[in-house]
Length: 117
Image 1 (cartoon, rainbow, N blue to C red):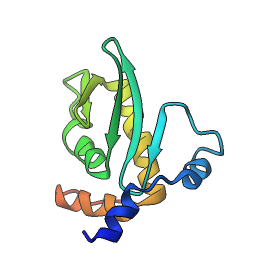
Image 2: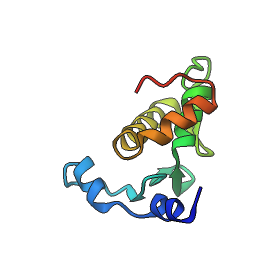
Image 3: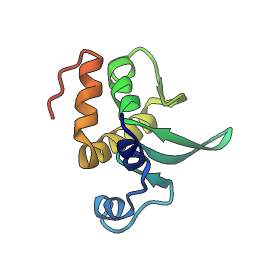
């Protein structure tokens, strides 16, 4: 990846966030760019900031989403009950489909998944 792409992938896309969330960005969204979304999560241990990438989203669907034997799921090193984690990952997937579908396709193929988007 060249320097220009790296800069672009870490740029905060406030205008895209506003468009994506209908000009009402939730408080838990801290920053977002083409290659990441930074979200604040909270549980019994306190608050934590997660930086979720397209790779994290693809790995979740590859490793965790199909596991129906466990009530626990993991995204970007953060573990929790499957319901809120699944909702969080779906929101991140929608964000990356909105701003960087190419990265999702590339990461999906690396895991051996055939993207349908």
